[in-house]
Every structure is written in C-alpha cells, then in structure tokens.
Amino acid sequence: MLDMYIREVTSSRKNGPDAVYLQLVEGYRDGKTGKVKTQILHFFGRKDKLELGQVRRLVNQLAGYLRPEDRPELLSGLEITHSLGLRRSLPVGCALARAGARPVLP
Image (cartoon, rainbow, N blue to C red; front, side, top):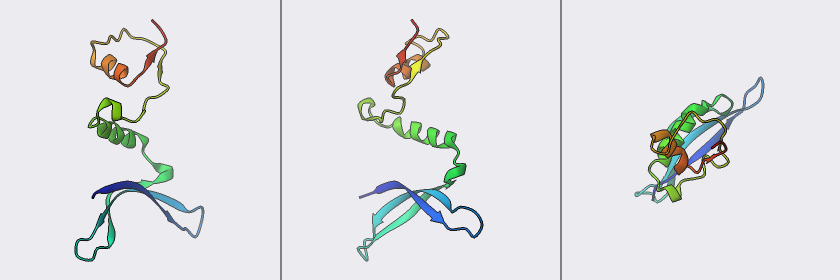
C-alpha cells in the first residue's frame, strides 16, 4: 500500500534558530526484508522560505482528480466582494460556484 505524507525535518544550526525543511515522502514496505522504508518524492525546502504559490498549485492540481464531494474545503469561507460580470457560464464563474464561493454582491 502506498502512503504519502509531508514530513518536517529539523536541522540544528550552530548560529541562529534550527532550520525546518519540508519533504513529500512515500512510505512503503520492502518486499524482501518486510521493513517499512521511505523515499523522498519532493523536497520543498525550508519551511520559513516556502513558496506558497508552488504549494497552492500542487494542492489545486491534486484536488482536480477528486470528485467535488471529496475535495477538501480549500476555499471555505471565500466570499466574492467585487464582481467583474462573471457569470456561471464562464469557466471562472463555474469554478467558483463549484468551490462553494458565495457571492456577496448581486
């Protein structure tokens, strides 16, 4: 069985605070030894210098493979406060409606 998760690794530094790094890790059982092993699939870098745009793109791409009812509430609490004439027939309007965005303005 494939198991993926985000792992935080703390590295002690002589000068200054410890550095925390984020990794996307896959856990699996070695068929020969029966022991659980891990493999780093992606290295995100230091947590305090994390590129949030990169993480948002990854989450949105992964969410696209889920059925709408199985998607996490990524946009929960989002309210549209300004309208540029977006309609439900336009791709952006449809995506916002599917995400559960509530229009504040008519």
